[in-house]
Image 1 (cartoon, rainbow, N blue to C red):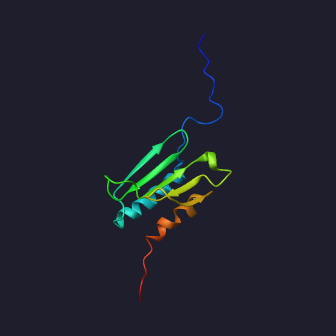
Image 2 (cartoon, helix red, strand yellow):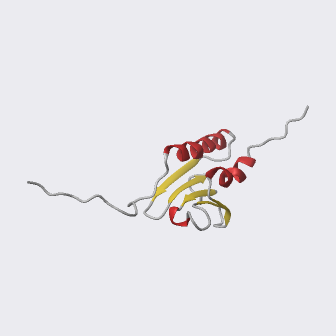
Image 3 (cartoon, rainbow, N blue to C red):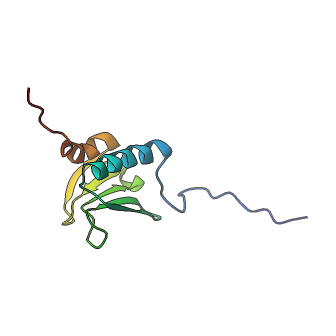
Length: 112
């Protein structure tokens, strides 16, 4: 007959973003581009983590990296916000609060 290929059971071969997560991240990216803060981005999907990196200029290190590490889901949260110098700025179990420090940069004081 034919060869039966077993289904991969256990850990997936690559970590990725689901549609809602990617929509939330790209929405923030679009607002930051419109405000003139960012100009480029990169997405890396590896076996351990999915990384979204946002750049002020394409030739620099990323200003922010948003990482999804499912292995840390039960410990400190699978979402991590990392700054340009490599320092962890925020960790969490939910994406919204991890993106909050970036979204604060978009707020402007409106006077009467």
